[in-house]
Amino acid sequence: MKLKIALLCLCLVGCVQYTSPDRSTWNYYLNGASFMDMTETNKLAKKPVYLGSGGKLLSDNNSKKMEYGDKNENDITVGREYMAKLEYELYDSLLTAGVSVERAGTDVVVILTRGAIMKNDVAEISSNGDSILSTIARILRKYDATYMEIAGYTDAMRDATASKAMSLDMAERVGVFLARKEIKPARMFIVGRGSARPIAAQDSIGRLTNRRVEIRLAPVR
Image 1 (cartoon, helix red, strand yellow):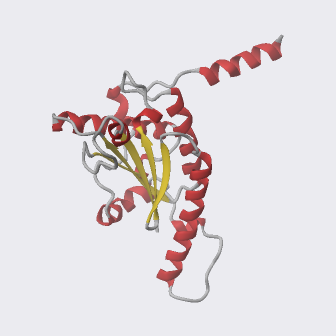
Image 2: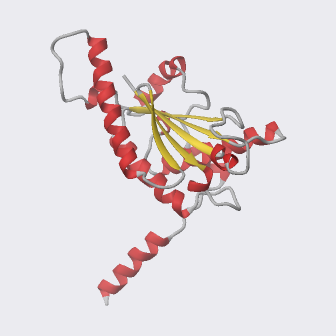
Image 3: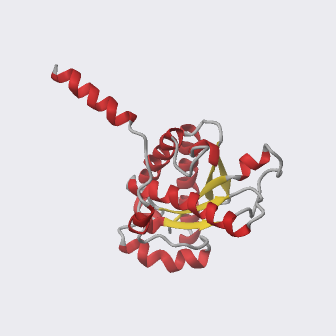
């Protein structure tokens, strides 16, 4: 009987639908996040906050000590290897429709279409999105010497203000989810870019692709 009860409890826990916390609490979950683009200047300015929160540098994860050669070139080599491993693990773990993993120089970008991670009728993480974002969070806890820019995008909308607000809501919602999965907000840059930077045509099919959240990951040296 006890075993049956335990199994039932596990089933109920696994079947609970994720719900974003009340918006009034989002500042609490995102305390330490930066609401700006992840530029080189902004990454440098954020570093004291990041380190103060217990953030790790790439060198902290490097067990291979290079005794020869230029230190900067060695750091770049280590960074490329680290990010390549991160890319492969994300790619292998996220083989699902509406999700893609790409390289952008040293950085790794995870593209999540809105339909893959959110409900159709309301602005909320879907059960499928819960699974996808939980997988991403698990990997990001492992590869913790990284900054992340969480950027929301919409398709072309007549009201630019509404477009900007919607895209920021998507990005913040993902940021809150990751924060609740033990991802330090001090690693995060959160932005809403509205309909900027479309990656598909603005037709009925392309619009579904342009509504997306991109998580761009960069090594912290």
